[in-house]
Image (cartoon, rainbow, N blue to C red; front, top):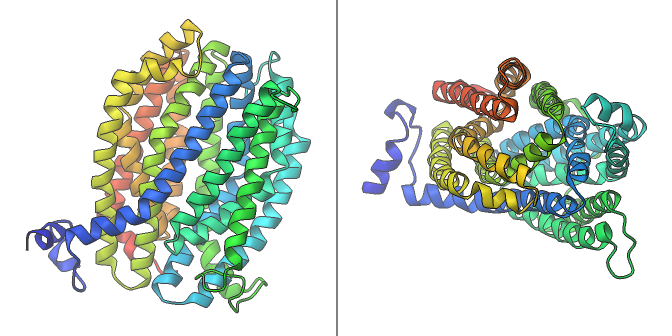
Length: 464
C-alpha cells in the first residue's frame, strides 16, 4: 500500500479516473522510455563537445567559426523542429487510441512535409550563408571559415531533417531506442572523420574547419540511412509495409498543423531570441565568445538529461491522453519533475566544483580557462530551473498545448533574455557574466510559468 499511496500523492482524488499503477511501475515505465532519449541527447552533446575540442586545437578563431553557425542553422531548421513536435504529439495520441493506420499516415505525411521544407531551407542557407553569418555577428578574422562550414552543412540538412522526422514519430510510439541507435552510429562516424579530416591523418587531406563540416554531414547521412531502414521491417508499429497513404489529406494534416503551427511560432521566437543572444555575445570579442561557446557546450551536456526526461514525458502524456487517462498523464508529468530535480542536483555539484577542469578540456588558453571557470559557477545555479522547465514544457507539448509554450517563449526568450543580456553586458558592464546571469533569469521565468500551466490542468482538455 505504500507504493500506491505514493502515486496517489501525485494527484488530487477528484482527478482519478481509473486504477492507478504502483509507484515502482510508474518510475520503471518512465525511465524505460527516458534513458535511451537521455543517452542519445548526451551522445549528441558529447559529439558537439568533441567537435569543439578537435576544432579548438586550431585556435579560438576556429571555435568561433564553427560556433557562429549554430543559431543560423537552427533557424533554418525551425520549421522541421516544429513539424516534429506535431508528429510526436499526434502519433502518441494515435498509439494511445490503438490506431496503427492513423499513426503511419501521420508519419508519411510528415516525411512529405519534411522533404519539401528541408530542401527549401538548405538552398536558402547555402545561397545566403555569408550575409546570414555577418548578421549573426561573425568577425572578419573567421568569416571565411564560417561560411565554408555552413555551406557544407547545408548539403546534409535534408538527410538530417528526414531522420529527425522519422525519429519523432518513433518517439511518439514509445520507440526511443531507435533514435538512440541511429545517433550512436552517426556520432561515431562524425568523431572518426573529424579526427581524419581536421588534421589530415593517414591518406586524408588536412581540411581543418571544412573537415569538421564534412564529418558532421557524413554522420547525418548515416543516421538517415539507419532510421529509414527501420521503416522496412514488416512487424514494426511504424512501417512502410503497413497499408497507409502517401498523399496530403485534411483529416491527417489538420491535427499535425494544429500542434505544429503553434510550435513553429514558438520555434521562431526561440530562434530569434537565441540568435540575438548569441549576436550580442559575439560582439564582446573573440575571447569572450569562444569562452561562451565552450561553456554552452558543457551546459548542453546537462541539458541532454532534461531533454531525455522531456521526450519521455511528452510521449507518455500524449499516449495517456489518447487513452482517455488524463490522471496518468498528470502522474507521469510529476514523475518527470521529481527525476529532473534529482539529476540537476548532481549536475549542480559537477559544475560548481569541476568547471575549471571541464573548460580546460576545450582550450589551453589561460584567459579562456579562468573566465570559463567563473561562468560555470553561474551555470551551476541554473541547472535546476533549466532541467525542470524542459520537462514541464515537454509535458505541455505532448498534450498539444503548444500555443501556451509559444507565448512563453516569446516573452522569455525573444524579449527578456536579449534585453537583459544587452543591459547586463554593456550598460552595466558585466561583460560575459551578464549574459549568463540573463540566461539563468530566463530559465527561472520559464520554469514558473510552465509549472503554473501544468498545475492548472487545462492542457489535459485539448483534443487532437
